[in-house]
Structure formats: C-alpha cells, structure tokens
Length: 449
Image 1 (tube, helix red, strand yellow):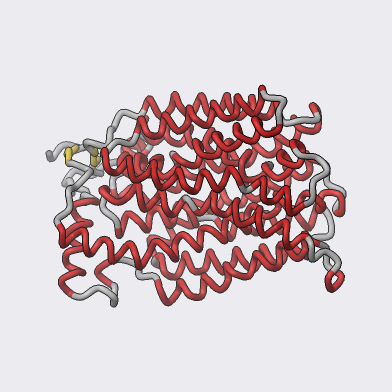
Image 2 (spheres, one colour; image 1 turned 45 degrees about the vertical axis):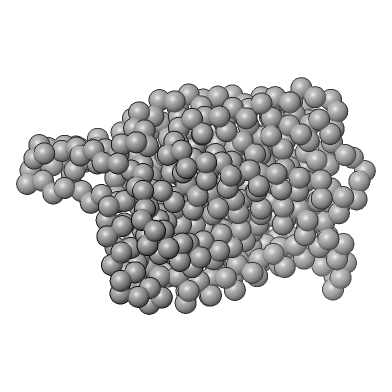
C-alpha cells in the first residue's frame, strides 16, 4: 500500500439505503433541472447556426467549406480554454463559473445577429467557443460532487439529453422564427440568434443564486442530510491515499495518461464527429431529402431524430445504472449509430434516409451519458477536473476538423454520402477504443500520487 503507485480496489456502484435514496432524490430535484436547462440553451446557441445557415450562407456569401470553417473555429476556442476552464472551476467553485459560462454564451450568441461577412462570423464563433469552454466537462465534474455512481449514468443521461432536445427546440422554433424575416428590418436568421440567445443570460443569473458548490456548503440541506451526503460522496469518490514517497512529475504524467484515458480520448473523437453530423448539418441534410418544402416543415422533420433520441437516452442510462454495466451499453449504442449512418448513406428514399438519421442520433447521443459514467470510473477523484476536460477536449478536436472535412466533401460531391462514410469510419475506431478500456465498472483503480 505504501509503494510508489499504490492501488486500491473498491466497488464503484453502491447500494443506497432508503434514507440515502431520499436525500439523493432531493439533490436530484434541486440540481438536474437547472443544469439541463443551462446545457439546453448553450447547445441551442452553439448549433442554431445550423438552421440559420439555410439563408445566412447566401446572405453572407459562404460556401459549404467556409461554413464548415465557421463551425470549426468555435471548437478551436473551445479546446484552447477547456482544460483551464475546468481547473478554474475547481478553484473558484461551480456556482460562479457555470453561471459565468451561461451568461457569456447567451450574450455572444445574440451578438451573432450583427455578423456582416465571413470574418465577423468567424470572430464571433471563436469568442462563443471560448465562452462555452467548460460547460459540459464542468457540469460532469460538478455531478461527481453530488451524485454517487448508482445515480451518475442517470444524472449524466438526463443532463446530456439536453443535446438532442436542443435539436428539437431549435428545429421547431427556428422554422417559426424564420417567418419573422423582414420584421424591423431584420432577417430570419438575425431574429434567430437574438431570440434564442437571451434565455442563457437569464438562466446564468438565476443559477448564480440557485447552485451550491458542494454538499457541505448547502443551505437547502439540513445538518443530518449534509453529513449523509458528505459521507456518501466520500465513499463514492475515494480520496487518494497519501504516500510518503515523493514522486516526479514524469511519474505523475504517466499515472494520469493511462491506456484507459488515451482510449476514451480517442473514442470521443469519433463520437464528436457523429454528434457534429447530427447537430451542424441535419437541417441542410433534411432540406436535401425534402427539397422545396417550407422552413416550418423542414423544422418539424429535422426535429424527428432528436425527439426519438430524447426518449431513448435516459432509458439507456437508467438501464446502465440498474445493471451496473457501462462498456457494452456504450458499444451497442455506437454500433446502432453506425447502422443508422449506413442506412442513410445507402438509401435513395428520403423517408428511409430519415430513419437512418434517427438511428444515428439515438445511438451516438444515447450512449453519451454512459460514456461519461465509464470515464468517471476510470479517473480517480484527484484527476477528474483535468481528466474529464482532457477527454472532452480530445473529442472537441474532432469537432474542429469534422465540419471542414464534411463541408469539403459536400462541396466536391454535391451530397453527404461520402461524409457519412467518413463518420462511419471514425465511429468504428471509437468502438475499438472503448473495447480496449480495461477498468470495468465493477472495480475502480485509484492511483496514488
């Protein structure tokens, strides 16, 4: 136990008592709804450009490749500031930092209505990426302060379900907002950025007063509930055992960058590429499947994949918690997404192609809550702030080059079929990487440094 890399095995899935269940449920009701709404509108603000592009590309004279660059530049800012954002949150507290993220996202997204060309749009998207850096990994880290492993996949699943729900809201509202084009001299896409940007600001202000950093500092738990939560989370997030042996920074890096962390980071690249297909290109793909239809009709059709996904995602996460299994739930969801992309690529019938997009969305989003439950089981508590951010940042790198590649392939071929093949290849790599992960949910290795 006292060796340089002492390792302790502990069960990661705890069976909770009735009193523990009651208090965790109270925590759930306090945290999940506001967290989910904050992510919902941050995702809307990030991806509303996908619907805006239907007319904005012509107004600003953007090719598909140039539009892809506007998507990619967002993720460059995101990647640069993602790890620092999580480290800062661990120091200043979730209440302050997550509120700041939500407010700045809303303000910059609304300001996108003032874009007049490619350069101004690129600049605003880069600032939006900086503003949003840390929202998802920060909230995933925040959940490790409040939810034991028996609840974590569900917490992650309900929170991350905001991603496909954002697609529903954006699709349904965007078609209606576009009908405001010409009102007060503004185009439809300008109204889109303005109207959908402001809720994030309001939520950020509210979250500042509503969120609590950790159980021990909460005012809405009584003293007995506080102590129960503190004890429960100490068992869930096993504290590292102190070693009297001084360890070099090289050894610390080796302990941090394990094969499991590397595998999950690479896996997340392919996942993000598939997420990019669903979030950034669905409106244009659907318009290609159903040409000549009104914007409102396209909006309703484009919402279909997200609606099915929003139902499937919490169900899969709850089943993962119930069975205390992570890896195979994730693998099967990735294979479902691959199957959907194959159907979309090979089918010539628009409605069959839409079914393929639905399967792709359900698969890649459905397993994402389980993905982060698997990741939190791989990372010991002292590595989680940076570790979650590193794994998420690696995926975000996929979001940098994915729009550029997909945009280029769309310009060259005139359709999205080769882009589908690209996403399928990356998802196959992701599946292999998940299978390489060796630390299963039944036991968690905590490396002492």
